[in-house]
Length: 271
Image 1 (spheres, helix red, strand yellow):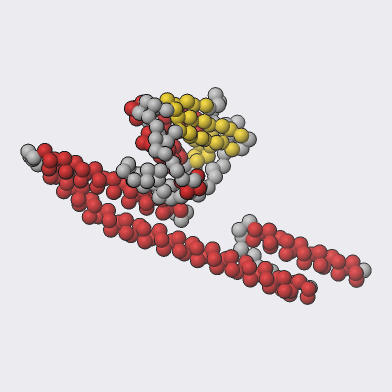
Image 2 (image 1 turned 90 degrees about the horizontal axis):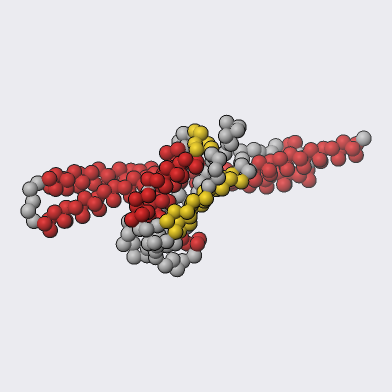
C-alpha cells in the first residue's frame, strides 16, 4: 500500500507539472506551482518552471508597456504634426480662392494642397496602424456577407481598373458566405488591396479574385502582375515600409499590418 501511495503521489506531481507546462505553452504565464505539494525529487524542477513562468510574465508585461509607450508617442507626435498641417491646408485653400492670374502660382498651390492632404492621410494611417498593432482597436463584430462585400468593392473600383485596362477574373461560390467580422475594417482591407492593384498592376493585364470556403475557414486571394520588376524576396516584400517602387515616385508608404487576428466563421445554416 505504501508503494502504491508513492506511485500515485508521484503521478499527481507529474500531472500538475504537465498541466502548468501546457498553460505556459498556450500563453498563460500566471499559474505557479507550490513547492510544498511536491516530493523532493521534483522541487528543483518546480523552481525552474516557476522561474520560467515569472520570466515570461515579466517579458510580456515589458512588451505591453513598450508597445503602449510607442503608441502614445506616435499618437502625440502625429497630433502635433496634424495641427500645423491643418493650418497649411486651410491657408493654401484660401490662397487658391484668390484671383490669381499667374498659372505657375496656381500650379504650385495645387501641388501644395495635394502633398499636404497626402501627408495628412499618411499621418492618420500611421496612428491607425499603431493602434491595431498594440491591440487598442475595438472591433464591432457582426454578421457579414463576404461575397457581397467583395463584389461591392470590385464594383467601386471598376472605373479605376478599366482606366488601366485591367480585366477582373472572379472565382466565387454561388452560395452566400457569412463571417463574423467588423464590416468597416474588413472593407478597408479589401479596399486597400484593390487600391494597390489599381496603382501598381501592369496595364492591360489580368487580376484574379478568388474566394474559397474550406470547412470552417474562408480564403480570399488576390493575384495580379506588378508593373515594376520586383527583384526582392517574398519575405522582404512583406516587411513594413517596403515598397516595390524603390524610387518611391508613386503614392503609398508601404505601411501594412502584418499580424491579423483570425475572424471566427459562422455558416448561414448555423446563424
